[in-house]
Amino acid sequence: MIAVPKTGITGAQLPRNWYVLHTRSRFENVVHEGLEKKRLEVFLPKIRVRSKRRDRRLMIHVPLFPGYVFVKTGLHPHEYLEIVKTVGVVRLVGNRGGPWMVPDETVNSLRIMVNGDEQILTGNRFKKGDRIMVIQGPFAGVVGYFVQYRGQGRVIVNIEALGQFAAVNVNEEDVEAVPEILS
Image (cartoon, rainbow, N blue to C red; front, side, top):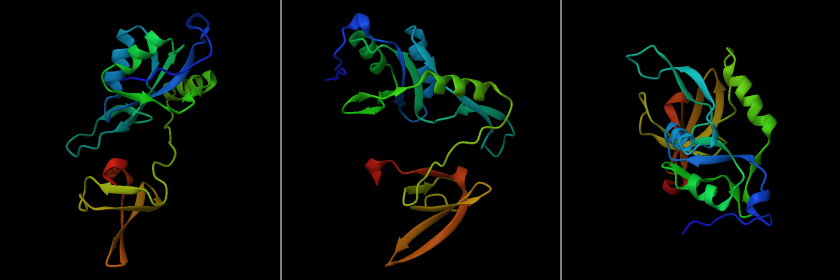
């Protein structure tokens, strides 16, 4: 059963605000298109990056925030159900008090940034102690803990065994977070 957020305002009075949707892995475009078909205002900020495929030197568009899409809604019960029933949607980001609103100026700033020609640098993907796995390169399959950023796209992965540790320095793009359910 889907829980509809509780509000003390009637449906006709709900203001339209931006919210963040958590999507299934690599379903950002599917969610974006699904919500557009439902005539909802949706925003998926994308940046241009070089393809990771070794046989290609293409610049491709990827989500600025993988796994997340912005949607503007008044959270009317019917509209809320239409949003969460969209293929690829996991949930609205929030807590027990309800979904978290994103200020309009934040979304407007992101629109300006992604429409510009400058490279956009994003914040740290990992915190010290996050469980991560090397997904490509000579250390593919290694599971360990994030230690620190080394600069120039390099990270240190710590592997513990027999009460001791071994650390390896790998490309940040070759590493992904291990989902909590697998940790």
